[in-house]
Length: 449
Image (cartoon, rainbow, N blue to C red):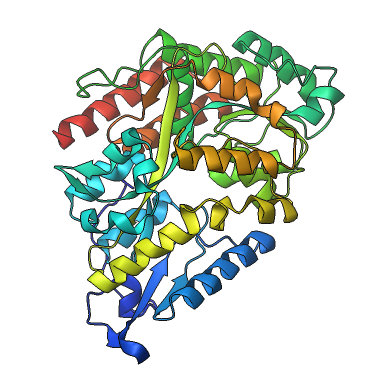
């Protein structure tokens, strides 16, 4: 995450040197293979016991197939946390295999904090089926530094059950912001605790959702050359004005500020939030981690979208990893994250665990043979009507993608203030909030050169 500040002193955190990819020689094992210990990010939290057990089962199966490799998992959720990412990198405490959001690829690579894995891409058996555009994002000067894991576009996630209860047609979700406002008012009117439309206000997620909304309206965060802020614009004002009016005039956004990622996910999982902007993986997280009812959710296209925020993440290897550790890390990624029918693509297991199988939550393989196999298996094991997501799939095919801005996380942190301002203060001065944010973002851009 770009929010790393100063270097942290590497203290004894109970991690073995090999857990951080120390580069120390591996011990010989019986049969001649070198013993290797790696740490891997993204173990599901204890609050999601079935998903955690599936992960642990995969670790056991992987180690059985690779008896020279010991895998130690970290269960930080979400996998990428802006509060810890920078300090962990700076302090040398990052896992052997760790997650990087697309906004941070360039910085992590430029700072030498990811290992060159060009010679190891063959460990990912379906490497050539990964979309070329997402592979290009982890490639610099002809060298590969990451394994693409997620690629998404934004849509409108909504609670079909609440739509029905509010007298709305869940098969005809809102297609405009005016329709969203009307639907939100009806859902909020269902009773105490009901929120028609949920939105973030902090933890960098407020600025992230501001970016989603302004892109949809045809605006930009930065000028084309990336040197100046561009969000203090009619489109930016429209984003904040709409949220202000929904919060204070319509009373359709509840009274509680939703700050970080988890707060809105918990609210969606409670079954009392009607709508939010998000990619399809929102449904997976809400159901798998926050106890949402699998049958309740649908996704439609981004309302009135002229462009849609396109984002994602990749796994990278700690630059301190030995060749043996790096190879083992790539083999783990192949097994758990890139094999149809295995690991995260074990849809039969996911269905048995009550996961929302059928959600089109990742386009990293596109329409390649691997992508087609994954999609066919997803439909075969679907645990909910695939038709619930057809509006999103159709809309995503026609809405131009737009990448996150450079230095996104610093910018999102600044824009959090504007989002929080309109959602916490009925008398918020939108022009001032945007002007202040513009000044601060321009200062960041000037400092970055």
